[in-house]
Image (cartoon, rainbow, N blue to C red; front, side):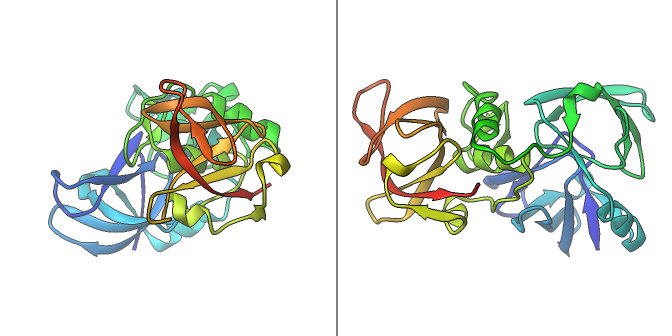
Length: 258
């Protein structure tokens, strides 16, 4: 069975209780496969990135097989801005949508998920943007100074791989959720001197495990989420902290998705 998210953001947790760690979030319009059902919880797989976690059963709206197929067979628009106001016409209420939210059956500012009718300003939504380095950097800049949140995927709280995932989704590329998974994609770039805007830089811990990712703006600067979304200098050794002048992250590899 499948479901759809018609709330702004839904936390995905490691276990089936409210005290459990939030490991990711589901965005408005994303669909899930329901893997297991308990009295208050659903174990789900996000069909956008295959990431699994536990969601409160009240936060997922079930879809019949026909409803899911109908939603899957249409071209989707996305929210391009970090935050957009949306009007639920059915319930006559206004709420916020985070960037990357999926708009089903969209036309001229109006859309529906099969249950509710919605309206947004037409300038806030579009089909995926062309996949260019300039677009990737420009979209990432919209999240500048957003606070860091483990598992977060919005301008109100985002982690390093969440930033990368959301930005690339706005250009039509659906990357995995975690940095080490994202590192398995793309073409390897051997040196920063060969890097271009929009390339991904990955960073490792002392055990050589990938634990961080950022988007290169050029061969000397990177935008990444660490404390907040920031722009810092980078060299062949890693990221140079703007606050301390020391290396904060050790460079592991560079990949080109574009």
